[in-house]
Image (tube, rainbow, N blue to C red; front, top):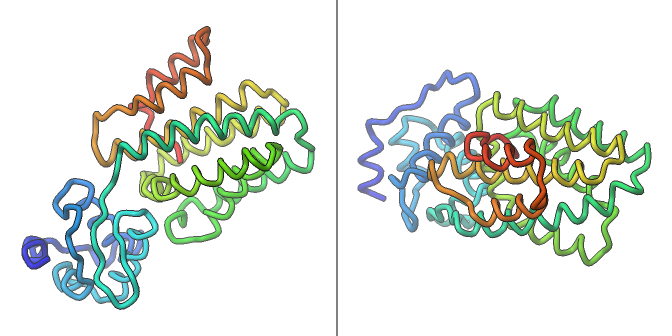
Length: 266
């Protein structure tokens, strides 16, 4: 950490940053981890980093909390944190599998969706929009997002839901990474959620499954765009091709082809 800390001493953060000091520190540390300046296994000391950035321990503690939720560091009470890094191979496998399992669950849910459930989906999406600016700091955004996905898949049987819960848990840190994306990409993410909701309103199973798959794939590519620009996700691409089918429409084929430049889901 001594070498890392000394190399950070020239870095300062804007204490008047509009999104809050903790978020500014978090963004800088996140960037240093993803670009490899703070490599896997690096020990991070809050006090040393606070001095390096010229901030107090309070925003540094909050930044560490967010990095741990994203899975980028591992920390235990009263112990120094260690950089975990990002396993993009794991991301590709987990999102590819989740895409197919969640699509299956959606297909089992759409036919029996009730007006009350559709209204609840709409309410969850409304909350996500209202909390967009607080998505990294407000637990309420995560609760609304989780509720949206729960409602969209609640018609699946218990075994499918247990399997899906495992993949959601494994992909949660990557969702937290995607939450750092810019506001314009979040508006696109909300449009993807809206497309899922619209398909549920029409009880259009095929479109709902495809919309959910495109949404999850865009999230995976959004994370890769930050961590390793230009990297492909072949498992995710194969899963998308399976969802859209060999006779995919030109629109569906276009979505799959444009995923690396879309980078806009959550």
